[in-house]
Amino acid sequence: MDLNKWWIARLPGGADLAMVRAMPEPMSADDDPTLPHVDVVGGGLAGCECAWQLATRGVAVTLHEMKPHRRTAAQDSDRLAELVCSNSFRSDNPHNAVGLLHEELRTLGSLILRCADEHRVPAGDALAVDRERFSAAVEDAVRGHPRIAVRHAEVSALAFSGPVVVATGPLTTDGLAAALVELTGRDRLAFYDAIAPIVAAESIDRERVFAASRWGKGGGDDYLNCPLDRARYADFVAALVGAETLPLQEFEKGVQYFPGCLPVEVIAASGPQSLRFGPMKPTGLVDPRTGRWPWAVVQLRAENRARTAYNLVGFQTKMRQGDQRRVIGMVPGLADAEFLRYGSVHRNTFVDGPRVLDAAMRVRACPQVRLAGQVTGVEGYVESTASGLWVGWSLAAELGGRPLDPPPATTALGALIAHVVVPGPGAFQPSNLHFGLFDPPAVEDGVKRDKAHRKQLLVDRARRDLAAWCSSQPGAATCG
Image (cartoon, rainbow, N blue to C red):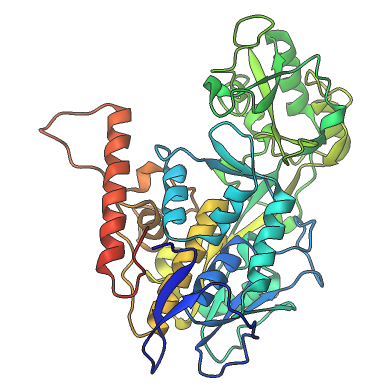
């Protein structure tokens, strides 16, 4: 069965209905009072995915998005599904945990992954997209669905009569965050993410850079690489450490950065070689002019299919704009770089998921309210999408009288859900998906396997267990 075309759902008081994604006569989400109705707050990746999954299962959805009336500090566009930080969905290799999650989301009929695949740009083995075309495709699909109504207004209170999904992301507004704090009875947690700069392609000195992908992956030349020798690297690190950064406000004191989005100057301050083993690692990148790996390298990834703009990979920063121009201008090939977007810092708000949420992402203190996306403590575009998909599936099944059990923690989706809702040994912290979150594989014959073999065991088991879960759950469609 093609899950992108057909879904089976049991509606209240009715028989099984086969529903086509594109209905002949569009209708407002409020036009049919016989349909169950859900309000989804937030038009990012999680909110759009959740709304889509609900609507394809016969649920009328009102999607609330505060843009264009108000934007967060990190947003530039008024579109739904805006990609704020990067245009990359990270590795598309199923032997990487997030790549395996890509595969599962495609199997489960994800709108976000479908649009990402349609608008991908070269990026080695990563799934990167033309961010403008991607967001436009998601918005067209959401607005064109006959069971989704989009309303542009800020929601600052959870005063809804029926089920509501809060998918407001890491920049939840103060009013709504306060409502969540009151609802959960616990203080919200916050840390700060940093955004990497984007430069114009025509301003890059092509005589100083070389095109290559690490280890020749993808097209083999998907990235532009700015090589630094040992002396230039040392000067660059010294400039980073000495750069002026934007001061913290009083409410920002005690700031905690998500480890996967550390500002580049924070990494540099941790040790003189830290960047060479982080975002500036040269491994697998042969400079054709020397036949060797550089001492260090700054990678540039295309922002769109036309390759008119490039993102500095891993170069999130909170430097002042003048220092961004000066310090990044020290990188070979970027002396005259035109900045299309400067790096910046933004707040990330999330709840203590294991204490606040159940397996269906319902708020324990008020089961009518569900959370999806980064406000739950997942990190990253793909993880947010997966969270929205799961909330859409589980809520639709519950409304149809056939509750779903979550996928087993041996699958990528199940491992992600378990991380958010199952208490761990220490304080809860947001995380990207990684194989360490999966249930460990059984040891075969008492023999310890190498890393590659262990990953293969995890991937094979996840595929089997996802298929078994789909076929065993009365509230799930048949997978793939």
